[in-house]
Length: 156
Figure 1: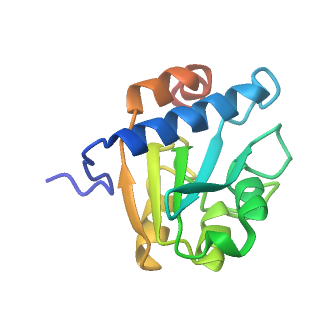
Figure 2 (figure 1 turned 135 degrees about the vertical axis):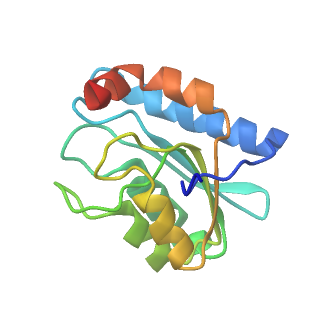
Figure 3 (figure 1 turned 60 degrees about the horizontal axis):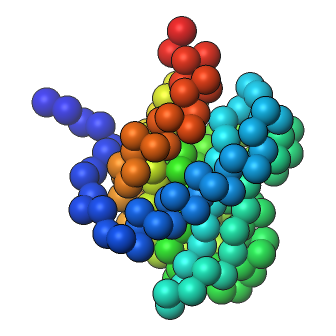
């Protein structure tokens, strides 16, 4: 039996467009994030984008932190779109899951599960445990293609 935290999600045009926007944002840091992945984040409340961000480089705040900062109080009750599962561990930066929980977001739409064993489903589990709806797999092939170098380094 598969106990993975992944749930299928019917890809709505809005979700697809927002994950594509995440990918577009993430590409702004192309060549500057190694060993980290390329990540973009968009926060939507009442049908309007209230925050965006991308991870500019290793040791810098993650995409979710920039997007939450831009959204401010508008993040409460909002939907967060991110091309890669939010981290749930302390590294050079604190866990993005905790920032999302603290901001009071209602839903997180994830393009793909992070293959890094430090994350790999744990971010999704943490968000769900906090009562946040999480859906996974929107535009997954495009998200995987964006970070194929990162995925290769993690798996091999």
